Amino acid sequence: MKALEGVRILDMTHVQSGPTCTQLLAWFGADVLKVERPGVGDATRGQLQDIPDVDSLYFTMLNHNKRSITLNTKSDKGKEIFTKLIEQCDVMVENFAPGALDRMGFSWERIQEINPRMIYASVKGFGPGAYADCKVYENVAQCAGGSASTTGMLGEVPLVTGAQIGDSGTGLHLALGIVTALYHREKSGRGQRVECAMQDGVLNLCRVKLRDQQRLQHGPLREYSQFGEGIDFGEAAPRAGNDSGGGQPGRILKCKGWETDPDAYTYFITQAAVWGNVCDVIGKPDWKEDPGFATPEARLPHLNEVFGAIEDWTMTKTKFEVMEICNKVNIPVGPILSMKEIAEDESLRKTGTVVEVDHPERGPYLSVGNPIKLSDSPSDVERSPLLGEHTDEILKDVVGMSDEEIISAKEEGAV
Image (tube, rainbow, N blue to C red; front, side, top):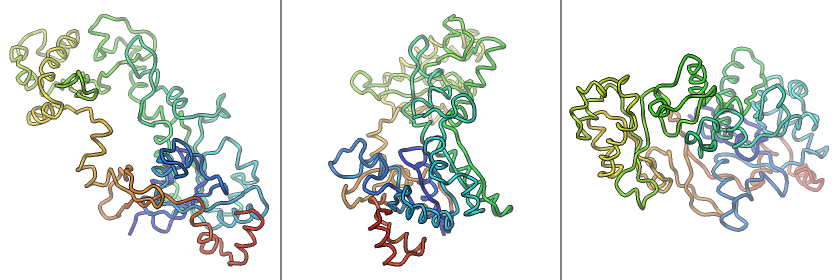
């Protein structure tokens, strides 16, 4: 049995943050009914298309395991059908602009009247405050949530990360909120509002930088590279390049082949507990007793020299050789894996982290699978739906309409 089997989700989401949330719930077995505009659908169906007139990878990789119904919620009949869907669903998820559903006549108060057990979940850009009505996209969220100001090299422009921590990250937070509200409903019998602001979600993932902001009030951040280089700290947590965020100095270093391979690098952490092993591996055994290198405190002013010596060694090995040698002696390292290497990784295929999905129009393609593994609840990945593919099925099975009523609704332009 799938973990969320029997839970029905009314999916009013589009683009990335909301669909990430509802796809995760669908992977766990929830029946997700994706509501889309007739003839148009989710905007991502047509964005970044690599094959003409075929749903884009952007759409397919965010909408697995769902059923699609087209519905014109601006028409009277469409509103009537939408009301029936609210009655029959456990959760409604939306990431519209602020106030969009209210203007449609479906405020939180109205939704509670229709279905007191409904959990109404929303992704917003900002929480209450000066920016509450502002629109937010992925990179805006990263900038407003503290990520960009702390990412990049010292003295250079702020950078956004390739990880979609604003959109997908907030979708993951919202999914947890929904499951928590479902659990609470088992005790209370009532639904509730669940809201996640993208700014809040990004900040939650940047908590170690908020930690460093407060530490900075009591002195320099000694594990940051700039401390060893004698560069003054300002009033805000600085960009720290590839320094480790956990207090153990770490950097990305060149490996054999870096001149032609942009991903021939490894992440290397000089963890205090295995410092002696690091010295032996890189051919610096005398550093184990040298007063300038023997302790973590003594090494902080010399991090450039330390990592320079380590890089002299890593440049003689491939990133995979570095990993093999270092892991045997408990030195934490990580090869910089390209998307091509990840796509071809057999171990990720076996665990279902990377899956191959067959699509009736696109053919086979790769996608991410469920990153959360449950021992007793399977989580298969099924293809995304075609636009309106399940409209008749949902109108019959969920709304309870007859064939004649469905025909009539289509003639009225409601579906």
